[in-house]
Amino acid sequence: MTPTLRYSLIYGGLASIVLAAFIAVTAFLNHKVQWVATLTFGYSVMLVAMSFIFVGVKRYRDVERGGVIRFFPALGLALLIALIATIAYTLIWEMYLAATHYRFMDDYIASALAKARAGGKSAAEIARMSAELDGMRAMYANPLVRLPMTAMEVAPVGLAVSLFSAALLRNPRLLPARENVRAASPSPSRTDPA
Image (tube, rainbow, N blue to C red; front, side, top):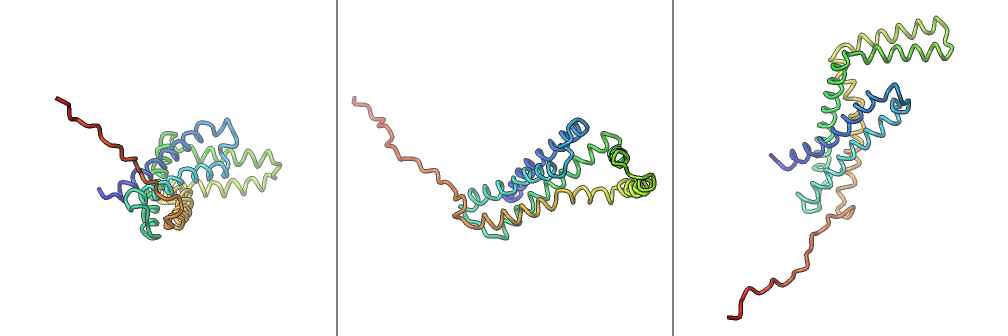
């Protein structure tokens, strides 16, 4: 296994663990704590998960490249880490959907319509909204539409962090590699006075 692949699997895997925990927490707390379901919280967690891109590229630069890496090799590794995390996020979401019998869209539509009713929308507006959401439900039922939609939730964050990481880490003076310098101590003499 090449070092690039090894680093992409390790750091993509770490990002995937954070994303899996996010999905699990969201599924568990969604109806209990309102801030869990917000876009701000979701993208904040995705940004934290994708920060493993920066860590992975820096570690690769310091260990495998002697503290120096150019933009495109750094970007290539960063994009591989992001790709692994994106694929994992998509597959984990699919497992969640399967475990909940694909109830997500039904729950989402029921919640959206309940909020519209509570907000005082007219019956005509609610009927129009319901028709639009039913179209969305039919579209989301198709895995060829659902899988890319899920991937596109996290992929832009991965792309942005990849570009940011490659641009910053090509400068060897930014967070330079720490050298392990040990003071050379004289070894004890093994000669015995006989």
